[in-house]
Length: 129
Image 1 (cartoon, rainbow, N blue to C red):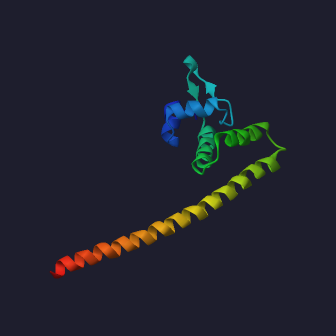
Image 2: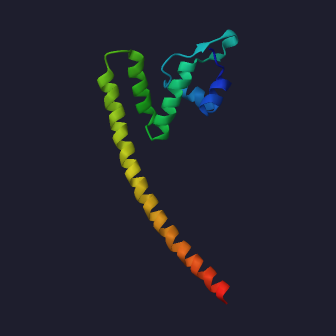
Image 3: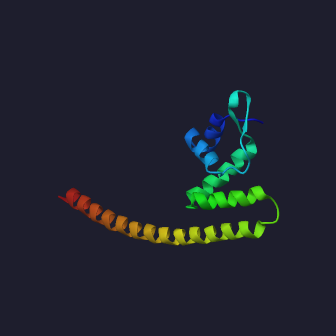
């Protein structure tokens, strides 16, 4: 199945501009083919790859690191240990982020509790008057 850049944008949530950026940055696993009139033609495989790259980017992987991972994938079999290293390092960074975010959430939850108690006590006093 062939997909236009607009269809890929719709399926991935990326803008057309972002798709062009990803292509220019060498983040697509396969070269994007051109159809009649020079328009980009994508496949479902491209969409699947982009979705994975979006997850890597959303979780904080820098574009150069995604590009390096993509280059390894493009090279084919034989470099799986390097790919694994990239993903394991990123996995550890994400785990550390999650710990930090949980600490932030705990602090915010504590503060919300304090304000809820205060606001409820004011409301109770106002009703009692």
